[in-house]
Length: 201
Image (cartoon, rainbow, N blue to C red; front, side, top):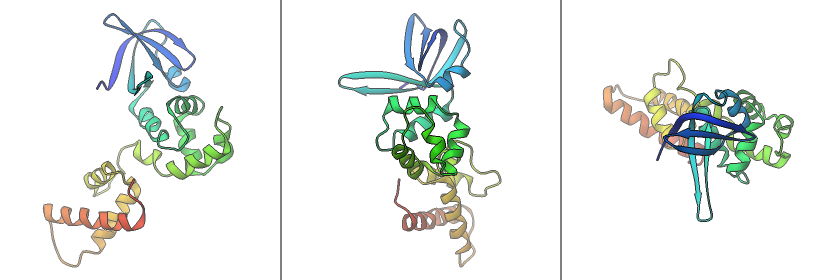
């Protein structure tokens, strides 16, 4: 499946752009905040895409960068939020403001987003707090466990929790060990710790 589409932006509408490439004009649902970041109509632009496909409907969604697409996919995990709802949410709040509101559990700020009520805002905080800011960016600078953290994140664990679990695993080593064997042991112990602390995502 395609990762992104690059072509001439022929038109910018509300929550939608049209992109012409190799004789095909794509109609793509894009959050308004992302549309504002894309070049003006008539210029070349690139959108990172996600295809929604059901028996009765097929729709292409696009984003200004991969981080925004990742945030969109995280929103889809929240009960009650579908693709169109996620686009509307992202179109009413910037990435930074969304991450800050989730981290600070700022329900009023989330409620200010058009179409987002208190109940859904609370669900978002429960499901996404601690995930967007960590999972959308690079691993923590200077972390000695960067590769292991990434591997654990790929399994569905939170990056911060993974780093903490690895640190605890290392502190619990009772005998000297190095190289790949050390990494394997730390990885295994970290999974045991994470599994006992929270449900696997």
